[in-house]
Length: 100
Image (cartoon, rainbow, N blue to C red):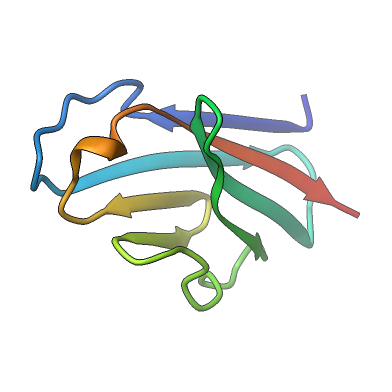
């Protein structure tokens, strides 16, 4: 129970050329100093972008490849995909780890 992560929307249908925003809400029961947030594309594509985040500080310089943008507005992280292409189809997972 110390860490709860939820994604919204749970599922989205996108056509080529669309803009997409995927949200990740991070709720932590106790004070924290640093967490690692990763967006992963499944199956088999691994980590798309990852960042170390602090509770009250906007995210670091964008750690994502072109066409992807990660924004951090505590307690919410948003992954934006610009100009979707056919190979962008798949499942995207927000993975969060509290660092100590």
